[in-house]
Length: 189
Image (cartoon, rainbow, N blue to C red; front, side, top):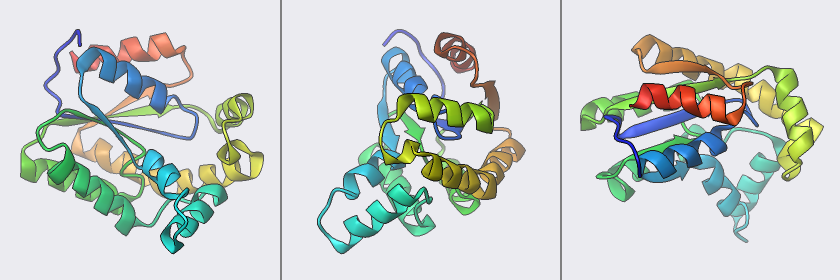
C-alpha cells in the first residue's frame, strides 16, 4: 500500500470489458482494502448444483443483470457485515437505479465516504475488447449485445443517479490502462 485516500468505498462502473477489474486491482495494490464484485459472486454461485445456482447460471450466460433483491442483499451484507471497517473497492454493483439509490443511502447512513468512477468506452470498443479476450460465454457476440442492452436500459440510469449526487467521475476508459489508472489516482489522492 503506497497511498492514502479519504474514500472508504470506491466504485468502478462501466460497460462490459471497460477495464473495471484491471483498475480495481491497481487501486487495491496502491491504496489497500478488499475487493467486492457482484460479478464474481454470480460466477461463483453459477457453479452451485442448486436451483439458485442454475438460475444464476442462466442469468449469467444469457447476459442479464441479476435481480435487484439479490444484488442489494449481497451489497448490503458486504457493507454491514463482511467489510464494515475496511476500504472496499466495488466492481459490478449498483447496476440498476434502485440499487444505486440503496448504495447511496447506506453510505450516507453509515457515514462512509464513497466515489464512483465511470469508465466510458463505446459499444464498438466493448465488442472489440470482448472478442479479443474471449474469457468465457459472456464474451460471445450474443451475450455482449444483451449486456449492452442491459447497460443502456438500467446502468446508464444508475450512472446518472450518482452524477446527481456529486459522487461520479467520468473517465475515458479507451485510454491505456496506465493512463486510466493515473487519472483515477489523481482523484483518490
